[in-house]
Length: 117
Length: 451
Image (cartoon, each protein chain N blue to C red):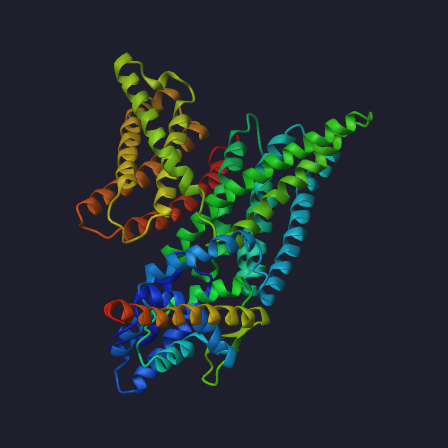
């Protein structure tokens, strides 16, 4: 089952930041990485990645530079800033909060289904 | 046979046409597309299949450009002059600015030269002499700016600038006898010809292509608007200078009239050239907006005039200068039609403004044919004068232009032809204006004995 559109959009920022935390990277390779890591469950409309990258750059969470690849192709690489690292920490914690809350509700709903307990 | 390169090019041109992306954004997306195509062909797909899939994965071009328009809006305003993130571009832009300063000063000084020599010889016709040369002070500098900043090559530069020199020599070798009608005509027509030569400098070797010429027309519209606004600012500043210095009993009127306005006017034009170039494809063009506001208004005014003309039964040709008035009307209609067309997508279906354009042209042609029948009928009675022949020629040239547009519009509405044919007609017709302006500027004076 694929991740819904809304959730994909919401998770784009932390995913990009997390990937850049590992290494500087360019758009196409980042998309491939997300596909790989999510086992094809998170599918981005590829063109939409770039406006998002622009926004992150405006927030000063990432920076970019041009590099010529070994095939002679001009590529725009992105690198994470310290502000970006901090933002990644925050967003990670937020996702974890959502996640753990969801986990706990499973416990609650389980209790409600069985009123004899 | 599938041509990958041309397909990628047309895809990126489509992105470019939206006007929402910067050149760097397009490079980035294109590099993505190529990476994906390489991967897909590597896994055994043909180039065509790989191209189709990659384009599909990148997503709808319109949706992408809409996304970009959201984020680029704020930075567009900031980056209107110079995209500060690009160091190369910044350096280039500084160099261009330096050229602008140099050429403004040169044009201003050029405009001062006849003043010195005229005061030496005490020529009574100095005003006409000055007027005749007006376009020769500024336009060569604009052309030279384009030739230099675009690195057009010295052969191209020399031949283009040679044309300016040749015109200057011919025009100034011609004598002028009272009442000086031919000099006046030269002064009016030479700028038209020379501006089209500026177009050749602006476009470089691509000046023959219809698309490129359309770009020059767009440039012209924006240039007039920007130049006009800056000139207003300069006039206001001059006035302010005079007033504030008057309060301490210093009379600056000679300085402002003879130096400030001459150099300021030249600088206004050169700055406009720079600005229009710098903001190209970043901000929506303004000339089409003006044209769209005024074309319905103009249509209503002309309709009112024609109704009044038929109801009262009064003929317009009793008025001495009426033909010039009708020439101006045709020129105005042409301008409105042209700038509405200039902002139009080539593949759009006919819209309200296309019908408006068509109605405007038909109305103008009807009114004009009434006037024209009168002048042709009376030409012999009036006798031939250079002014009348010039006005008549202009009228015919404009009428054929608008008539051609009307016919093509009609065909376009009936889905017989593509819209691009209208653009082709209009841009090809620029040649006719160049030839006519050259005939009036260079051939009329000897034909009419320099009177």
